[in-house]
Length: 441
Ligand SMILES: Nc1nc2c(ncn2[C@@H]2O[C@H](COP(=O)(O)OP(=O)(O)OP(=O)(O)O)[C@@H](O)[C@H]2O)c(=O)[nH]1
Ligand SMILES: [Mg+2]
Image 1: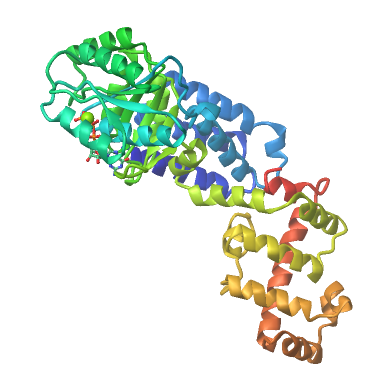
Image 2: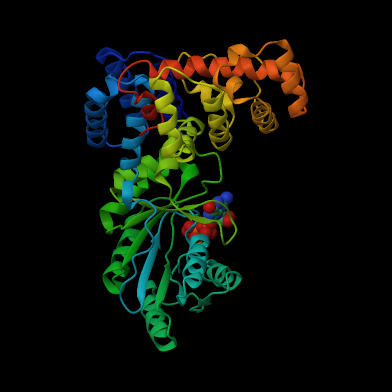
């Protein structure tokens, strides 16, 4: 089911991305596909409708249609809106603790990872100088308290131990009193899970919520269970006031549809991601990364991002100037090599650029880039300014000077000419901002 969300959106956007021009009809066809995929993943109808309206409006903006790579820009718009849907700025927000002690309550289906996550959260808080107390209030399953005690101990955390009798509310009250007496500033409530949502459990959780007034009430969802997690998220959200979602088992091959749907149906942001069974395998949820995963193109988007980061403003300006004057010398090429090394494999960079052909056998690896730089360094300023003077004897001299072969020098020239073509394509039209726009500025 969730595989299909990724697959369908990915396929649709792939088609769009390969287009040099995106018409309104292309866009609408793509949005229809995305709509179906989202609805199938159980994202609410209204959420989907608003999402698509926002994407359409932004994608049709002049900025996009004027750009050199409209398909890619649409992908970006979809990605950005997905990030918003996943909680935007609020995603990955740390625990907001208030009260003395602050009470953090975890709820969720059986086996979703509540107890394990309590250990991880406790460890995280302890690392921030807090003094958490683990409070097991799962009295439904005989071994639950024992398991919580073990998890707490393994994480080096204090735990309010008891024999599993009594009531959840009674045990929670006790734990809070105990925390006050012992100087614990956070209580982590480990509640009971069920295989399915049932009235008895909901009543129990509501009573707990009323009694302990948690500052954070987090729904723990197993990312691998898909639709089940989504359906029960809605039910939990209707009974208690959730403040966030923790998505566990993201180290598996779940593709993120669950994250999207759970965030959408509960209307609260995903705060943390569980990425393993070990006690330190908890991360602040990264909405941008998850959006990339949902789109099934994490690599491409990551590449755009790393290009954005690696390409410093000054180099970009220098390049743009070179492009405006329609020249792209070997000097400029040398400057891009350093940037490319920071960005990733040249083939990948080229693959992002519509219409750019990746030269056959252009396996540009790290060593080759270093070699390229050495070759250019062995040239005279006149040779760097105009490659056309590079005749056979000059090439031989340069190869000797750089410790390479004439073939290496020839290969470099070929790559340089490819790059020059590419650069001209960017610099040809507009106010010289195409290259910058490609890089997302
Ligand atoms: N791979 C992986 N496994 C996890 C993660 N979080 C929890 N688990 C595993 O999921 C299983 C269930 O975890 P628990 O913490 O016992 O789940 P629970 O929600 O407390 O379950 P109940 O108490 O029965 O309601 C355990 O085997 C955990 O090791 C995660 O992020 N990644
Ligand atoms: Mg448990």
